Image (cartoon, rainbow, N blue to C red; front, side, top):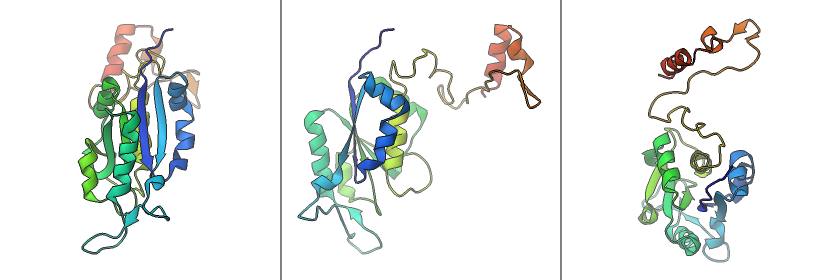
Amino acid sequence: MLYTFIDMKIQVITLFPEMFGGVFGASMLWKAQNKAIVELSVVDLRQFGIGNRKTVDDTPYGGGDGMLLMPEPLFAAVEHCKKTSPNSKVLLMTPRGVDYTQKHAQSYATNQQDLIIICGRYEGYDERITALVDDQICIGHYVLTGGEVPAMVVVDSIVRLLPGVLGGEKSAEIESFSDGENREFPQYTRPEIFKGLAVPDILLSGNHAAIEKWRQENSR
């Protein structure tokens, strides 16, 4: 089988690069990199910190608890990433962002534009970094300790849609949310009966038209 080699590049800016080793090095993300469909890399924000201590955070003006990521290190990190990928779109993982959906993943995968993903930390970030950002993304209405897990979610959701990653031509078309709000229909495999639980008769009938109708009815 021939694959289309896309050479899409995704760079993630984070204070905790070690969090990404297992995720980027396994399963479909490893497969996509091994096939040269995508290049994934992690940039340590700390190397762009200020002074001998490589400081990346400071207290907020106006008072308040916690620390904010400073603008200087983040600007420097994005500029570093753009040296090798000047046309990258910059994404910021933030609870203030647009709710992320399958349509967003499909759009990024279809456009195949290089991406730079910024992971927030602590109490947030200096608002001036949004001047660098094309899209602000929220993966759900809850709070996490940082943007690393959301970044992993976004990368996984995009890369798996790139041609040649999943394998089957129809794999991504029948999934939940692939055409809007519909969910994926229930599926079964052998044995026909397990612990008294049976496969629906319609799936054993061989009537493909009836099976397709059943699947459509059960994906709503």
